[in-house]
Every structure is written in C-alpha cells, then in structure tokens.
Image (cartoon, rainbow, N blue to C red):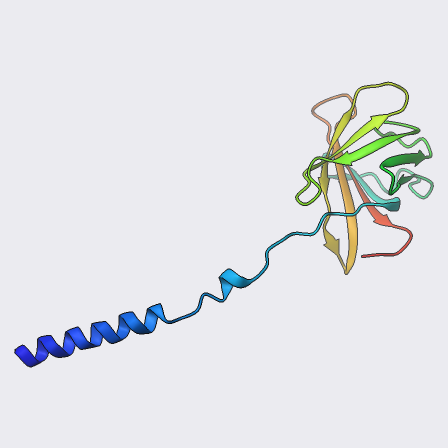
Length: 150
C-alpha cells in the first residue's frame, strides 16, 4: 500500500511539472486588429428593401459614393439615399466599426448608418443599412470598390 501511495504521488508530481512546463503559444500571438480603410469609389451592386431585391427595378450603375482620404465624401446620382451631395464622414471606431457617421455640408444633422465590411468572393464589400423615413422599411446598399483593393 505504501509503494502504491509513493507511485501515485510521484506520478502526480511528474504530471504537474509536465503541465507547468508547457509554453503558452496562443498568448504570444498578436491580436491587434487593423484599422478599416473605406477610402475609394464605391458602386452599389445590390439594393434590398426588407430583404426584397430591388436591383432589377432600379438602375444602380450611376449611383456611386466616394470616400476620400481627407474624411470627406461625395455622392453621384439621385438614387434614394439618406443624404445627398457631399460632406464629411467618420467610422464610429476605426478598428471595430459598427456604423458610418455622415455629416452633410448642407448643415443637416449627422446621419448614422449601420456598417458591415465583409469579404465576398475575394473582394471587399461595403454594406450600409438605413431607414429612409418609415422605420418599418430597412434598406441595405451592398457596394463594391471600383478602384481595386480588397
């Protein structure tokens, strides 16, 4: 019985030393997220209202939104959108954004748009979700960057 206790204590000691000697490799992996860069000219590829695809009913080719590196934006065409013309923009958080804040130059209030930045088929997309007046109608503008980039 005494030999059994000594063996079990010896085994426990070896196991504890073995577990404590393992290095924590996952703790050394950098987890810093890069800031999201939405600069460039974006064209709407799909427009949905409450999940219904409106892309076939509307001409989306001319609607473009250009986010400039200096924090300004310009919108081309008169497709229904929450703002028109030009103004300033910012992301609510540069690394983990959930919304884009647009400040029109016309002196209107800031407009907050829900924001997603997924990679679809190897290309970066920009999805903006908003309501154009009636809160029960939700519009989603899915855009692709025209001037390259991922």
